[in-house]
Structure formats: structure tokens, C-alpha cells
Image (cartoon, rainbow over all chains, first blue to last red; front, side, top):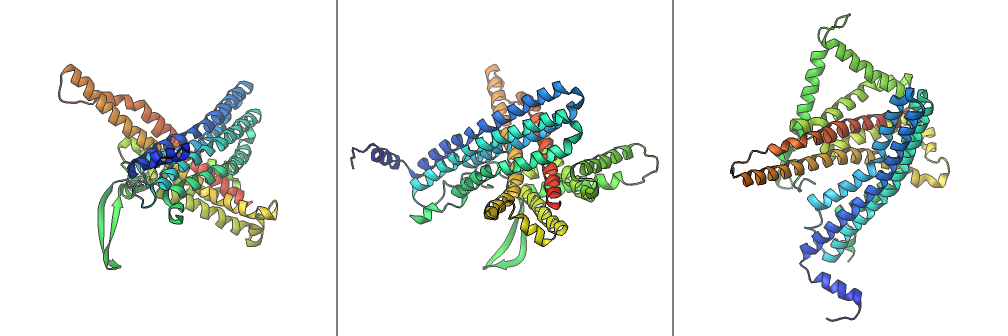
Length: 184
Length: 247
């Protein structure tokens, strides 16, 4: 049925595709959207690396401890990127939505939503990287306090991770325990 | 995720004599389980052989063993405090098992930690330790009151934060290792095709995948660097969370 409303025309065009093609197409976009989360760890780990270089220059004698703390903090800051990669890999290689029963457009948009959700990883990536940088700087100034500083840094980074985990839970729920199909 | 092309293969099935809902219960045994047994055998063999014939003045292999044990004890004391050195055997086992699992890719053995079941199991052990030792050392009343800090209405957020710990621990390890597995598989496939194309240009029909040696430096990054760093991170986070819960 012809419609002058652009959105209705777009949705009609979408529904003209084969069901599986629609879901797989949306999975492709979702996988790409998820990887936008790589922005966060990039910025955060860069900040940590910069602070690491500064700490080693200020106190070469503490360079072993500074480098160790920088690596530990950066590895934790990586988590958001890895969670986004897991969601993208699930959508590409272990797609749970393509054989699901239910309205094709709901399943397709769930795949898109799962990808969108992981963009939240930008925040924890930047925040944990900032914590890693400041921890490295502190250890550079006082290498003997390494274990106390690392404990506080890990605790703070774990709290900062929580919104990233919320995003992962929503993404996994949309892919594996989709509540929306049953609501139709 | 076992339905996808990169999940662990099912190696054999055990037919049990039990019946459930009219069907015989068949247990599929995957690569993950078999590779875990292999790593267990390697570690147990190493432990038995390294602790035989211990002499008061160490010679040869005993020096390596003593350095390893001293290193693990020192790391535990430094991270958790002098009084909690009793955790060192568990921390050492975690470091050795997860470390060897992560670099198993170098030996063409699919890492058991590339299966979310393994990493979730390890993370749940850490979760149980955090709360079990927290209750034991602080007492049940003080432990429960801790959830109402700093303000009572933050209780749901505190609970969500505690649940986030095993999820982030397991998915961080799983994601790193399975990401490496998939990238290396894709790379080997691409290099095989490249070898085939180049050989085809020269006119040789048999394919010798010479270009696959280019993958070697990437193994150093994905398997050695990322694998060992992630195992160290897992052990450090376990130690830090348990010691924070206990004081």
C-alpha cells in the first residue's frame, strides 16, 4: 500500500526483504556499532601511557613499578573494548537471533539495539584509563606505596566499570533472552 | 555460542545409563574439558617432579621451583598483606592454570579459557571467596551493614556493583582470549589463501602455506603478552577484592 509518510515507506521497504536477510543485515550494523566503544579505551590507555612516560622521566629509579602499574591499569581499561568485541563476535559468528521465532522486525531491531548498547563502553574506557594514569603518576612519585595505590586504583576502576556491565547485560538480554518478542 | 564456527568442538559423547523424560542422557565432552584435563596433567606432573628429592642446598630444577614459590608468596604478601599469605597456594594455582591455559594457543591447543564456562567458573570461585571470607572476617552483621554504606538507599546499587564483579572478571578474560583465537584463525585462513594465490601466479598447483609464518609475531602479542597479562590481572583482582572484603 502506498504511503506518503517517509517513515512508513521505509518500514514497508524493510519488510519487503526476506526475514533472515533483514535480521542478518541488522546484525551487521549492530556489530559495527558495538565497536565504536573502542574510542574509550583508546583515549584512556593513551592518557595512562602519557602519564607513564612522565612518571618514568620524573623518577627513573621507580620506572619498574611505574610501568607495572601502567600496564595493570591499562589492561583493566581495555575491558570495555573487549566486552564490545564479544558482542560483535556473537552477532557475527554465533548469531542467536537469526533462527528465532517471532516478528522479524522486532528481532532485527533487537540486534541493532544490542550493538548500540555497547557504545556505552566509551565512558568506562576513558574513566578507567584516567584512573590508570593518575595511579601511574602517584607510583612514580612514591614507588614504595605501589601495593596500596594499586588496590585503590583497582577498586575505583571496578566501580567505574559498572555502567559498562549494565550495557553488556542489556545487550546480552536483547540477544539471548529477548523479552520483546513475547510481548507482541 | 557453541553453534558458531568458532565454538569448542564436541570431541566425544558419554552415554550414561540414566534416562530423563524418556530419553537417554548423553553428555557431550567438548575440547574445553579435554584441554583442561591435559593442562591439569601437565601441572600435576610438573608439581610431582619438581618436589621430588628436595635437598637443603638447592641444585638445578629445585632453584627454579623455589624461585617460583618465593615469587608467588611475595606477590601475595605484597598485595594482600603479611597475614593473608595463606591465600598463596590458591593464587599460585590460579596464576599457573590461567597462564598456561591462555598461552595454549601456541601449542595448537584451544585455550580452555576461550570458553565462557571456564572463566565464569573461576570468577564465581572468586565471588564466593569475596563474600565467604568477608562474612568470616567481619562477622555477618557488620558484613550486611556494609551494603548500607555510605547511604541506605544505595542498597540496590551496592548489590548490582557486587554482582558486576564476577561478570566483569569472567567476560574480560573470556573476551581477550576468544578474541585472540578468532583473530589468529582468520589470519591463518587469510595467509593460506594468500599463499595459494601467490603459488597459483607462479604456476605451482600444490599449496605450501609459507606466508603463515607472518603470523608468528602476532602470536607473541595475542598469546604471550595478552594471555599472560590477563592471567596476572585475574589473579591480582582476585587478591585485591578478597583482601578489601576482609578488612
